[in-house]
Length: 196
Image 1 (cartoon, one colour):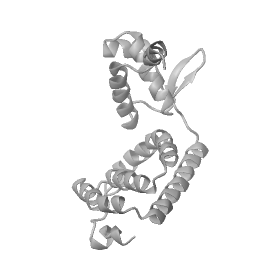
Image 2 (image 1 turned 45 degrees about the vertical axis):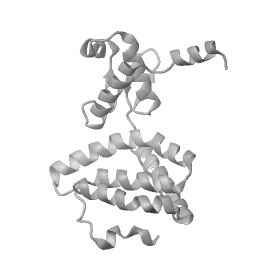
Image 3 (image 1 turned 45 degrees about the horizontal axis):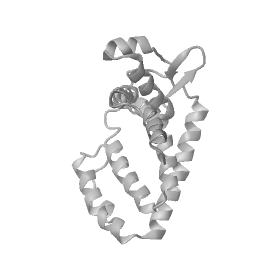
């Protein structure tokens, strides 16, 4: 591979500023600072972050690629605004992917992955019983144990948009019912997954 080709590829990689800005914007999206359908204006973000348009455009493009924002020709970029049906379809897809991941993990019974389970359970217990942390640790382990990289990539591509809407629903529900979002205490019957 020629040095010119490598240099050309490097020009298309996001800058560290763009990655940092994308991280801040992603967190804002997940915590509801930006509402579905809300427009994000480059000029406003440029002034807020004190950078040129380049890193802002790169950051926005990263979030478009993650499925959190959408580019509207001649209008700009806005937060995705999924219909009820689109949200249901995404959740249904994720259920199928998770079921397949769990089935593959069970069929493989990889000793190295099973040996990791006590550490995963330790992280779950240390997380204080919050459902998102429990789900994140457990699902990460399932897909790792499944040993199917394309399955994992598909799961990750659907994560952002679903997380955006689940977070909003959970925040609304928690304000009405504070006990939602807390998992029951883990006991030995929940944690003995090594008998897989």
